[in-house]
Amino acid sequence: MTTIDSEVGQKAGAVRPARVVAASFVGTAIEWYDFFIFGTAAGLVFGVAFFPTLSPLSGTLAAFATFGVAFISRPAGAIVFGHFGDRIGRKKLLVLSLVLMGTATVAIGLIPSYDQIGIAAPILLVVARLVQGFAVGGEWGGAVLMAVEHAPPKRRAFYGSFPQAGVPAGLVLATVAFLFVERLPDDEIMAWGWRVPFLASSVLLLVGLYVRLQISESPEFEQIRRNDRVAKLPLADALRSHKRPLAVGILTQAASLVPFYLVTVFVLAHGPAELGLARETILMSLLVACILDIFTVPYASIVADRIGPRKMLICGSLYMAVIGYPFFWLLSTGEGWAVALAMILIVTIGHAVTYSAVAAYVARLFPADVRYTGASVSYQMGGVLFSAPAPFIAVTLWSATQSHWSLAAYVAAACLVTVFALTFTKTAKESY
Image (cartoon, rainbow, N blue to C red; front, side):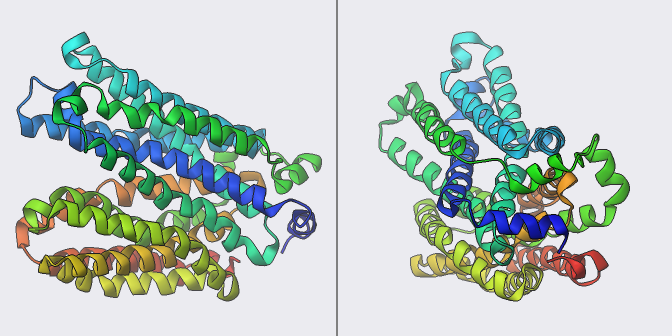
């Protein structure tokens, strides 16, 4: 451990832990709520509201394409937020990411339909979605660093698990919001009901801002600023001196992101038609699994702090590689209990074990002066490489083979990418 780490570790004990973890969890949950409600609305109403001139299928595809454009702006957000987060501090950028996300989300709820303003409606929708992606690109790195850099040295995984738990929490909030919306008559949903979850983000934004404004700046950033070690060009420094940690950080994401996006996008979208599952069964099973995941992520991080995040990630990746086939086989039965068990196995257990250790592991791959940039770029590029194409690859494999083995093999291959990165790189072995 460096001198800075030692000094900061002592100061971290003086910071109120509850305030730090609350700020990281609440803010992240709100941002991912904003991110996920777009995906739900895309499948439910956006095809009709913003692309009525297209056929129903083409309109739905266009709506989901707007969901995907966020992956274009997420790396840009990681670079810009990373640069200024390493230059002027974590806290300011973390507040800014929340404001941008909340503003874009509320704006979506106010966009008139295609019937009202024509082609301007889908254009405004795409612009707002790009802003959402840009904001979430800077959110993860900032939230993780505020938690990990405030943490005592032996509790970094635990502190870092709270922004991680914010992701399933955001998904739960988004799902519950639209469960209420779907109780309305169809004409009321199309007229105004779908807008309510987006406009409700204004209230959540105020809550998130209040919580985040109460915390102090990262003690590790304050230390490098006092020592005049602030990087002038963090991205250039990271690319020049930390290529291997960047590669490891990107590849580390595969084991948690591919299975999670297969479940939350592919299974939800194609489960009823391709796998013969009732949509309500999938949705309720996923909701229960994600609620449990909010609690299992922090519990798994306690183990990660004891054995080390790297070992935890390897164990979790191997578990995910093995559980892929049982997961899809259980889904194929169509039984409610089997679908619920499948979701618990891969989300509540598998996702918790892998995702709980990612924050502490990736954050410690980089020195403090380029850490916001390195961690953010690693995570968001991992999202581009592994999250974005996962549903498309799954649909292609299923269409070509009609076999659960092909989907299970895809999950296993992604998990082995992470195992390879963690096992056969010198940087990974030296971390934490």
